[in-house]
Amino acid sequence: MTNGTALRALLGGLVDYAGLFPPAALPMPDAVARYARYASGPHRTMLGRFVLPVARLDEFAVAADHVLPRGADGVSPAGPWRLSALAGPTDGETLVAFNAWEEGRALVDTVEAKAESAAAVSSIAAALGARFTVYVEVPVRDDPAPLLRAVRDAGLRAKIRTGGVTADAFPAPAEVLRFLVACAELDVPFKATAGLHHPLRGEYPLTYAKESATGTMYGFLNVFLASMLLRKGIPTAEVAPLLEERDARAITATDDGITWRGRRVTLHEVASARATFAGSFGSCSFEEPVQDLTSLQLI
Image (tube, rainbow, N blue to C red; front, side, top):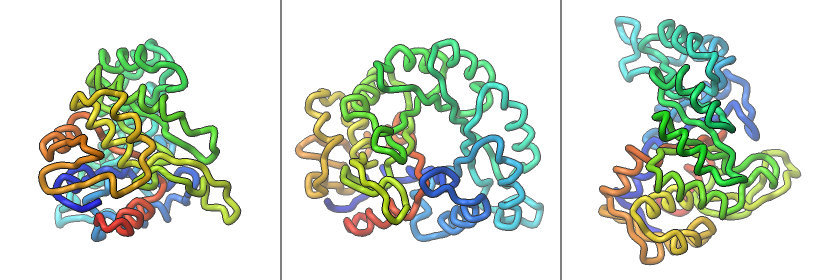
């Protein structure tokens, strides 16, 4: 694989930092300190939002108070930290109050919720949809298309869980592909979470424990490039093997596009997809994606 402008467009703001969550499960002060370091570090263009549960917003405010920069008027000269809160329909006023309290320093602009029915999607939309960008995590063991239609009709976005700390938490490639196909066909923007610490498909430890079991994980390049090819209209059968691609030599990135085994997305298609379709992925590690990309000589 080679580097280029198109790959940078794919990677920009791609990693939402979820250091509070397993397997890292860091204390709030540690997660905040790391995010602050990443936000000023050499790979800051890859960094997206700080992810946290709504119940920990007050804890975040205390831990982050000394690291959020202030201008002469008390407002961060670099703009507020952007936060993504795991919340539900009853949490709207809490989120609004937090944003008013931390105005100019930290901003919850994205909410991640869960739904297993169209009625639940409607409830989330009614409570949160007008004020936040909302991603609804839908189950993918069964065909997610009916729920994704409800998500689309409500003006919300979708979320897929692509892994966890046990092998059975990872959906099958056919299930991930079915989700991506439905999102492309219905024009539903999406994000992913869990199990995407590495660029390419492979065997990796499931946790950071010394004797951790290993499991087969998806790569974030596999998932997001597959979504872009599907959106472009490349047939599903041709894209399916990409979710299991392990050879970095199969992907070529230049200034004007990214090619995988003869299937290509242009720089414009990458940028358009990232802006309106393929959102981001949550990861409890920012360093692992960076280290792996570095080892592949991509950044």
